[in-house]
Length: 421
Ligand SMILES: *Cc1c(COP(=O)(O)O)cnc(C)c1O
Image 1 (cartoon, rainbow, N blue to C red):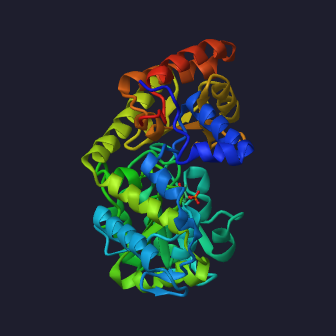
Image 2: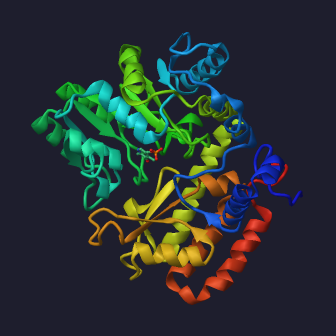
Image 3: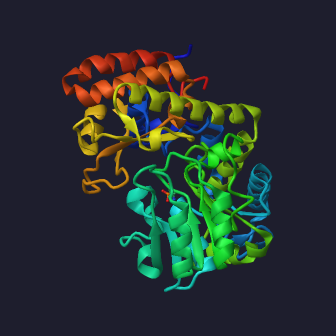
């Protein structure tokens, strides 16, 4: 196999023109290739996505939408955005897509702007129970500008408490209900959320930033038939460029488009829009459907391997690409576990578990995800070994060097960004 790493399009030229930045690209790829990446929100894009990102489309100002731009010379980039929109609608069976949001947070900001006025009430998942900062945290615009009511998971099942969601909705009459999370390992019951939203006359927004790739591959049920608006990121399990997007009903298309531009953003990043189109095309392939299924099988194998070693998965397992591991039985904080794993060559993040007694900077849990290792071609066998390595790293900080060797052996076979990748 070719041992040369793939540093991205035209890397040789960057090296000759700006060796300092070129060196950073080399070091970062070395870092990524030198460890196991279990961060649930990361992935490795294809070289085709990288090529679109590293293209001259970055130069073009294209405020507005295809055919209705505020700049001349947009007829070529219009084709890229039309393709991205068509492909997103086709991939997800959506009536309308906006592919301009710069990130998942910008997509949520625009979606809220389309549906709410400052001071309106929205109901969303609490951050310490797996929700996202943009779902009403006080340190985020969402918590500052809206009257946010939060629901969580039950203490006994660690699953979303749909009775609580309904009670809160009836009591507070929110204008918007948000479902979706950043650290919730289970499927979300969109039918239940739709029913509750209809009962109180609220809009339903599904923030599918994390599982959208699994939905694209048909590995889990899609939120699109149930939600009025679906926001998502393109860089997580979907494996596209860093960015956001919004799907919505035909009814809301104009509102969503006006909220993205001119309300929230200026000119779109046309190179990123083109790279999103590439990613949507890749995600429509049978290979990607197979990938999405393997991501989940790997996450389940990883959660089981950790459970065998006494590290309990919150809610008892996972239906998705991620698992949340409760370390309270292991006598280690999330922050310390994150540090010990890093030392052993395994990158993951600390994460609050439901009803966590520790503060957010410490936490009692870690979050693990399998989009990266699955892209690298690892299967349940390798992932089970990773589970053993994670437990050993957490429990026996003295064995970091020995674990690193086993990590290196796994990576010798499954390395991202080989020259022929
Ligand atoms: C990752 C994430 C976002 C934000 O995405 P960014 O691109 O980092 O802004 C929003 N919502 C949820 C649920 C997420 O997991």
